[in-house]
Image (cartoon, rainbow, N blue to C red; front, side, top):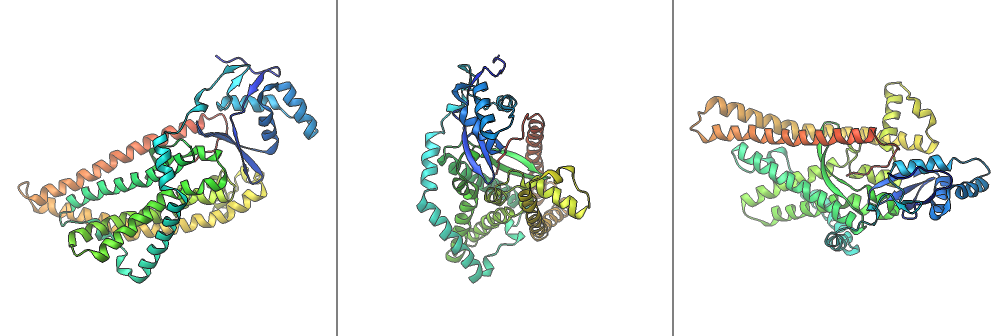
Amino acid sequence: MSRALTLQSIVDCSHLSIQPEGDEFSIGDSSIGEFLRVPEVAVDVVRLLDGKNTLLQVKEKIDRKYGEDVDVLDFVEMLKDCDLIYKIDSEVLNDSFRKEVNPVLFRLGSLFFSKTANLLYAVSFAALILLLILYPSLIPTFRDMFVFEPVGLSGLIFLVVGWGLTLIHEFAHLLAASKEKVHSKIRLNLRMIFLVAETDMTGLWGKPKKNRYVPFLAGMAWNTVIALGCFAVQLLSSSELVISFARMIALTTLYGFVWQFIIFLRTDIYYVISNWKNTSAMHEHSLMFLRKTVLRKEPAEWASLPLHEKNNAKWFGVLYIIGGFVSVTLTLYLQVPALWYTLSYAIRSLSTYTYSSYYFWDSLMVISVGAIELVIWLIGLKNARKERIAQRNNPANREQEAI
């Protein structure tokens, strides 16, 4: 058990990174992914926690600089609760700070997200937009989910391909974060009722702002290349089966790309904007603004928000409405027609054919695919509940970054 903190304690926090975030700063450690958003006075305290000064000496210097009584001991207690202290009086509290990123992942990240590679991703995006303008027939529809006439078989293939592409998207985030020497992990979670795979990249808060954009956009960059490849196959191939597979993959990839603009689900675009505008609680503040504007219920926390956070919340709230429009469009254009088509097929086949018919068993496969999706959704629900419990038990308002 570590000893209690007193003003005579000598604390070492020299490992902590300090990154400016507008008028505030992020302090923390990328190895363990723990960060706090703090004002400048807290940064000055951290810089003095070098393992040489006692807390009393730190307090005297800070009080002298700011001309007021600063509760240094209370702040350092919070750092201790957040596991952000390396040593107290030469006693090591946390040796995880020295953890290195897997060298293979670092080399792969450096290859796939070099300056040349990033330029190619940008060119691919421009080419993708140009092809969609020149060849509108490339835009997929919900029927492209079904490669074969048997819906159950097509549904199973779509499930496997869809989750495969999702893992590729998340692996891109993981490699780009590894290039920045940030530890990350892929997990299932729920955003509202939507099942998502996400990559926890909290450690990016320990890197300069400009170094975070590529990891945030890495998944969309790979989506762009995959979709462009599918378009090329459709234009060049003469095989109907190959073209059908290409259209299915393009549908899945483009759906995932557009889905990132539903920013109220805290998608990739959400984190890009959040990083650009220096806000650590865009989601919460935007919900406050929407409740205040739409429901005429002003949360108590709204009055205490800084002016720049209120201004951000106002136009973020507008973006949330746009995200809602994108969500409804995707649902009506793809999800509802596909669900109706699939259920109609299953009900019709089960009522028409006997167990000796292939179509009977294919309909059972439709039900099986639905059951698999339900199991995966329940796993995401379990992870989401664990995350909410961890946040409730969190002793401080830590910054979280998961894409």
